[in-house]
Length: 306
Image (cartoon, rainbow, N blue to C red; front, top):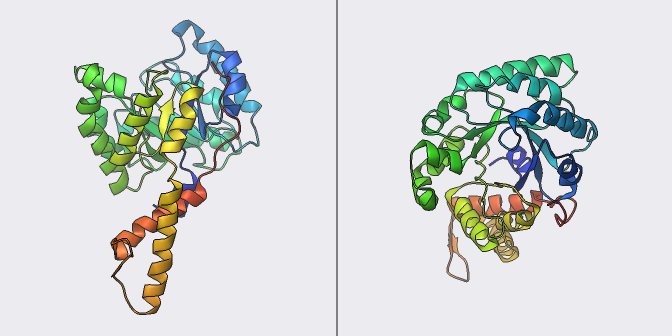
């Protein structure tokens, strides 16, 4: 993972319904690393046009602010709304567009083409607005590698609820039945040099123990960051994706020992605690230290957004 990749990684991606003006006024101060203003599933069809205007106004008020990072989840490319969504929200405050229910490179190319036109029209740097494709179906999983051919794509998010429904699996066994799909997205992301995928929301808002357990599992699989739907979930997610202080200290000690060993002409050795160290192990230590140095918690304490 390069420095540029680390610099744009976000741990907690907090959703806000685009039709809820009160929540839109608070979400940026909720402490999340990224905010996702939602024009899709959280907005009823009758409220789509109004929500689009509210989100556009919220973005206009954020011009010049880089923290938290701001994404908009547009409506699906198979709907009549997505193009007007983009026309309403593209501007200097927008960092990312989330494309829901992504199933093909052709869909992403259509979004990319309109974004290129709007960036040019509005004086924005070409390609400055990234894409995140949300994978929510069997077809989306199997065609994820094809989607990576779209140069604007930064990475994937996973949507467990729709994926489980799509494959006719039992939602109660979601941890098991989504395992292959999640591992596949991790492998595609790594092989094609995308950001690590973003884990799906945890819908039991009051079950913070379950949130922590499943977030730790996602991190262990190779995900980085998680979507969330309530500010009470933000700090748990951030904690899981922040390297623990003792782990960082151990990594720094290993790097120091490595530098000393290399000065002596030794490329493999054993630490006092018995840990064997070679180039493969030291690469992991470098990644831990780089991640720890790059992560900074956003403003606010996330206490008042419900």
